[in-house]
Amino acid sequence: MSLQSGGKTVFGATVGILMLETRFPRIPGDMGNALTWPFPVQYRVVRGASPDKVVRGDPRVLLDAFVEAGRDLVATGADGITTNCGFLALVQDELRAALDVPVATSSLMQVPMVQALLPPGRKAVILTISKATLTPAHLAAAGVPLDTPVYGTDAGRAFTRDILGDAPQIDFAACRQDMLDAADQILAQQPDAGAIVLECTNMVPYAADLRRRTGLPVYSIYSMVTWFQSGLMPRRFAQDIDDPRG
Image (cartoon, rainbow, N blue to C red; front, top):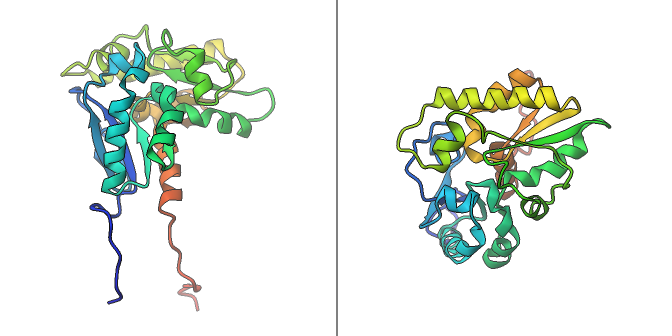
C-alpha cells in the first residue's frame, strides 16, 4: 500500500452544512435529514440561530457564530460550506472571506443561471417561506435581478407558520398543500414563468409535486448542493473502454 497523507479528521464528506438551531421534524428531502444526500455530509449547529431570527430578523448579527461553526467544519475536513436557510445570502461575502473555501449560502444564488437557461420572454420565479421579509438586499446579495418575481407561502395553513415557529410537530400533508397552493398562484399570476427556484431548504420534499403541478423545472438547495459537491469531489472515471461487447 502506498503512503497516504492526512491532516484532517473526517475524509470523504466534502460538504459542510451550517444548520440553524431547531427542533421541528425533518423528513427526507429536507436539507437537515442526512438521508437526503447521495453523498456524505457534515453538519454543525449554529447555536442561537433560530429560523425566526434569520428569516424575520437580521442574520448578520449572528455572523461570528456562523464563522466559528464554519471554521470548525473546515478544520474537520469540509472543502466547501453551505447553509440551511436561503436568507443567509446576506452573509455570503463575509463567510467566503472568513472561511477561505467555496461557500454557497443560498439556493437563490441559482437564479441568474436558471434565468440564463430559459427561452426569451420566460422568467425564473422565486418561491420563499417569507415573501414579507425577503428584501432587495437578500436578492442583491445572491446576485438575483431585483425584478425577479417572488411568491411566498406566508398565507398558507402550516408551512411558514410551523417552520419559522419551530413547531415540535408538523402536518406535512398541510405543508404540501401550501406548496401546491403557491404553485397555483404562480400559474395564475405569472404566465411568463419559465422555472421555479425554491428559496427555502425545507421545500425540497415538495419539488417533484411542484414540477408535476406546474410543468415547470424546479430548482432547490438540493440541485445546488449536488452541483456544488460534484466540483469538490469530481467523479473519477476509468481510463479505458470497459465495453462487455468487446
